[in-house]
Length: 156
Image (tube, rainbow, N blue to C red):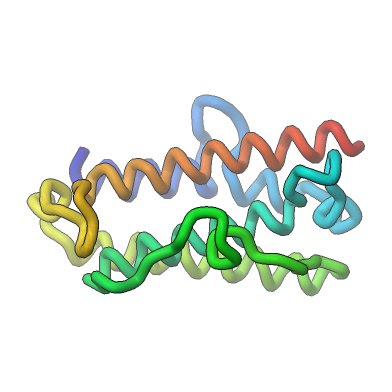
């Protein structure tokens, strides 16, 4: 996987026409605010929590692309899963979608500055390659978009 392929996949999954169904942005825009903070049960995450989780892991990738060796997210910490986040209005929803879109644009901008050989280098401060991280971020978004769509379909 090279830089161009990675960018194409990021764009496809975010607001293109992926083969498996609706892209992230379309899915989120169609879900009414009423459902964003509901949970299927006490142990599950809300759509709001999942979107912030996606944003935070995108920020992780952005920081690593920038070369920030020290930036990290501890699994199951508040940096991984924010607490007490709510979307009460359409304005709130638009703000979180803007933040998600900002991370999308920044990811693509940063990747465009890298040569294909960068994909085979190790992530700063980690023992895996940049290609693994970038592909993982795409898979992470697809996985959580599926969860979001499932939550919405079950709560309707």
